[in-house]
Amino acid sequence: MSAFKEITQILSEISDPKDIEKFLLEILTDNERRDLSLRWELMRKLHDGIPQRAISSELGISLCKITRGSKILKSGDSVINRILNSKVK
Image (tube, rainbow, N blue to C red):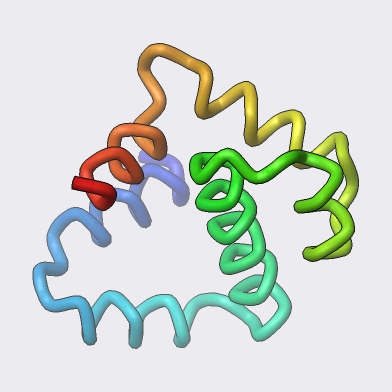
């Protein structure tokens, strides 16, 4: 099993959000957590319909990263889109 698959398996087995947070704090550096949080914020803003140039300006990230996120949300099998849609309801 690859290390990435092992991590996903471990996360799927943790039921307490506090334990998930602690696991991520232990395994990720400050920069990695910041990058992950920034990526999630980008996806939320795209899902909310905020224009890509506004997101780029506000978050200080490239349009290339934003375009990638947009393509993911437009994908028919996007887990992120499904999660964000369920949070809106």
